[in-house]
Length: 230
Image (cartoon, rainbow, N blue to C red; front, side, top):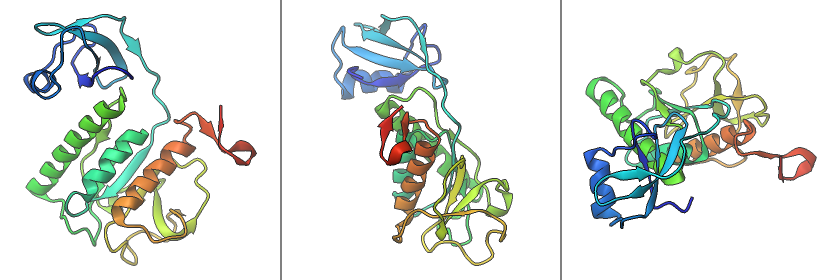
């Protein structure tokens, strides 16, 4: 955690930074020789390295983190930087997969080049957030889907839904303006995000927090009526 930064490499056992990461290390962070950084392949493997005059030198064995419960956030594309905030925070709290969702009221229409650029931007944001929070598993950003294409076991965040999140591993969060009537089949399980009406980006973050927490990936539990370390 005391390392200067974390970088993505192909092989933590033989770390080599790409040109952009090398420039960020030397020019932006102004790293000094013998300062330490973390490198990871995004698949759970990592090592600590020292900065040398040229390149990096590994100073620890390669570690392998255990992957937690898989969680998926289906997130409606939002206008401006709002979706980027939700993607970054979902990455920080430990969400495994994020699927861009093209809802009827989505202002950003995920078609053609827009869909490609949106996915690429979310991938970049998730990679940057993963480095900042020191997670060693990349967030997978999937191809955009419409609600009719979402698997039946995925729950839907909806005002007035159930407060019982037990066993939930995937949830869909809507756009500004919410869901249209009939956008989801009546049999779809609805979940509440609390008693107040949330902004779309806040709803995305809240859903990510609830997913990661109840999946047990934080090592916390509400048993006994209060948070306690497992």
